[in-house]
Image (cartoon, rainbow, N blue to C red):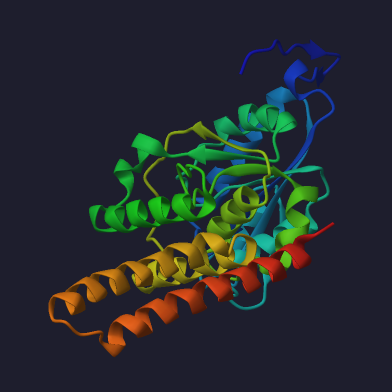
Length: 303
């Protein structure tokens, strides 16, 4: 990030790009005793030279190791869930606790470099959310998970009607005021970041991606294979809530196409089967449900 930073009587002059901006950094932590203190220190090292007013909040999600003690020793503001409540529930607690206008979220496992925070915050002055795009850095993601991520990103991009480079990146900066209305929709588990992306993109919010490096995590991943199915269901649910026709029209077209193919086959047999009629009726019913869902969505989301 460009901009000069100079010492003035023991204080640091605020970088011009960040003038008047404040930031709360929320870090959820679950069994991350080996990385949480270093992650917090990295945030301090990245933000202290900017001269802005900021806070670092670590929310311990009922860890069974020494994470809570390590977080308290790091110098961050620390809160804790009494029991393991999930990644999303932990982030929501942190966002509600945040005092400043802009909020950044990042993981405690050392995968997201904090040095990107000042630049992302500066970009967020003209955006509602800035997301770290892991891009080529996804080479650190296990091979077995890459096809699932590719499917999720492309499926979500289709439903959101815009290119979503990185659907569930855990490093992002956003305006707190823009996120608060969506908090009731945000899930308790790992789908939190996916839901934020879909909510923002489906509601015309200003959202941009910026390239970042993605490091090798400290400790073991908490993602399970069943989460892929949960992500698909979540994407359909959010898309149906904000843009239902994007789901129902293709589904109806698929049924109509099958009906046409079955009708052509029936004509070669000089017969009209119940299956063809059923497919045509099913497509009309799906489109009708889509129109009703669209009207409900517009009534629900109107100012």
